Image (cartoon, rainbow, N blue to C red; front, side, top):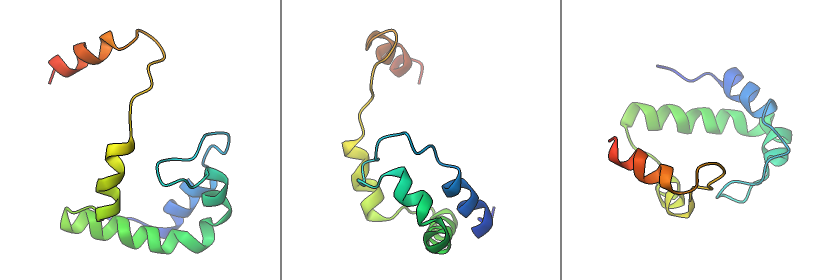
Length: 85
């Protein structure tokens, strides 16, 4: 598998800008407006991560800040999902 700069840039340009910032604190509008400048570094990071099977340390740390938001069905669904694995 290979990552292409144009595809990464296109994904950044088509981000939904009405969403909240992610764990990194960057608002999607910033990513969208900087798509040209950041698409190459992101492509390199994605490719290297895929090729080596390793994630950048900061990305691993960000996982602990992600938590589910229950919209429908409450947290009962989480227990059901956890049992299916």
